[in-house]
Picture 1 (cartoon, rainbow, N blue to C red):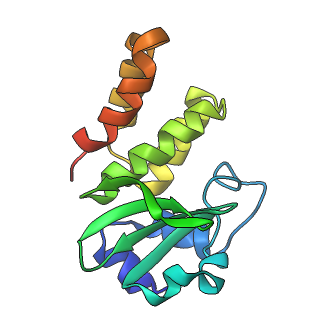
Picture 2 (spheres, rainbow, N blue to C red):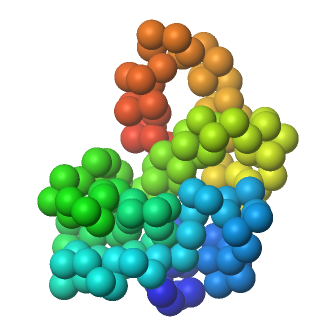
Length: 147
């Protein structure tokens, strides 16, 4: 993984520092691990830039499609999400961090570290969209996070 490639894709120094100096105990330690397992997957033959992993889940940039995507390394043809900006894939990550029950303070610190610009809106909207609306909101919100 190249620092220049991450920067070019729209990620800031915080993500670069986190991935290069990975600490399992950090706020992002579980959900955002340096990508390693993708190398032993058939996805390694595709034109991708791997960003991070979480277990068997890979988040990557598909260079030909110019999209940020996420899939399981156990079924690389089943792409779960496709977004057109770094902020959108970060929104997807922050929804997962919210579901991991990080406090609002922790989410704010992580957002500052990663340069996620939509954390205040995410926290406001997650409250309004709890209950039966939550599932649909989680699918739609990241696509509204451009930039």
